[in-house]
Structures are given as structure tokens and as C-alpha cells.
Image: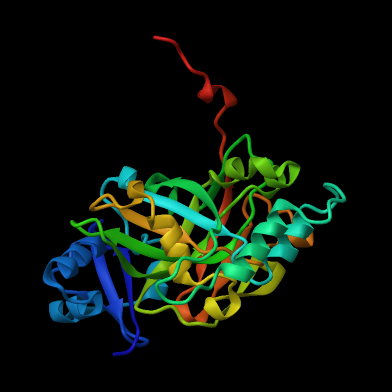
Length: 332
């Protein structure tokens, strides 16, 4: 069976179309309400998600490029209650991660070995354990709930207090927790793990703050195994012209951790095994425009393209207008 891609498209009447493709042509999945419903059906029946899609059968053809151009691409999977969707990730997981992090934090000090470098080296030494064994823990961070998930084509809005808004081209794993608490891997998506790198650079202990930003993934969900060698291009466009472009690598051939090891260290916590929850877990990157001295501006478009994932992921950069005093606490 070839690779299957699933996407969710807003129809012209505001209904949702569940769309699947096995090759270049995309078709509506018959009698499908949402990707999450298909996942729950697959879990309950013991079938794979791909087989569940094929069992539903296909209806009308869908022009995904046209839907994308019209702003009708939705997240390829979402939870009806955003509070039950976790956006999380791991860093220093790729073989070039340490040099990128070092470039970001250049000038912080003359320490021979930083905590970041120690964690990276731990991953290189112990992040690829044999099957069934537990390897080194990766750096871990929380990005937000499903409210922070942004569909392809929609703006990634940087909060008014942010010092920067920069792209992070990544692959993310998508998981749904089965009724018995077992994490079930749905597939993989192309992702932009949008972050505030100026805040992070000012003090590494502010990493957690820098990650509390929206993120985008999709527009298509790859059902099945992640290719071992993912190769793509990350670029920034300003007024339609490319101002920065660089290749990026992912997949286990280019990582210091196995996917299984990253999954273990996320789902070992019972909090993340609550039945029915959706998880989108970002696997990290070694390619950042910020490390090359680029500062994105409102209106710039981030484009992340990798042939293994179908359509590219594009998002303009937006800037929020809210006032800082929105965070003021009022006593009861």
C-alpha cells in the first residue's frame, strides 16, 4: 500500500470535507465527518487508519491547490475541544542542532561546555537505544493547547510583548490516546514550530517563555511511517520575493534520537495518556533563519516545503495588537 495523505478542507458551504489521496489526485472520503472520527473508528475496529479510509471509499475529486489558494485548508486533524489537544516538542534532537543553538547564543559567555551542548552530547551518545530500551532524555517543551494550532495559509500571530517571531521547520508526530490509555500514532505532518528566538537568546532559562507561541502544521497528514531521510527547504518571502532560503533535514537518518525514544519520554507521563486526547509533538530542527541574522517582519511569509509531505506549509507572520494590561489579575 502506498503512502496516504489526509487533509481537511472547508467547503464553500462552510461544511468540512475530509480529503485523502494516495497519488497526485485527491478525493473526498465518503461519510467522513472529521479526521478524528476516522481515527476513533480505526481504533475501535482494529484496522489501520489507511484501511479505514479505503473502506469508506471516495467521492468527488478535490483540487487541493485551489482550496489552498482560496484559504480553505484546515488543520489536517483537530480535537473538537482544543483543551484536549497538546502541542509539545523536543529540541537538540538533530545532528546539526548544537551548532545552530551555539550560533543563536553566541556571545553569552566563554563556558567550554554549556548545558545545551551537554544535552546534545547525551543525545548523540544515548538517544538511539536498541528496540525496547530507554535512551537519553531530550530537551522538552510545551507550546500550548489546540488554541495555538494554526492551519496552513493562516497567520502565525506574534504577541505584542514578543521580541521576535521566527520559523522552525520541523516534522511533528500526531497521536491520539486510545480508550485504554495507549498512545496511537496517527501519522506525521510538516510543521512550523514558531518561536521567539530573541527572548530565548537573552537567557536560556527563558526558553519556556519563547515557546509559548502559536504553531502550524499540515496542510496534509502523512499516514504511515516517517521516511528515514526527510529533505526539504525553508524560506521566507517578503513582498513575493525570497529573502532567505536554506535546506533542512529531518528523519532518523539526520537525528541524534530515534522517534521511539522521543515518544517514550513524552508519553511516559500519565498526564499525556488521557483517553481521547490529541497530541502534536514537534521533533526539532537544526535550521533557523534567525541563526543567519534574519529578522522576519509582519507580512513576511514562511514557506516550508518537503516533497515527502505533499503540499508546502505556508503562513504569513502577523502581529497582535493587544495591550500588556490584558495579563493583569483582578482579585475577587
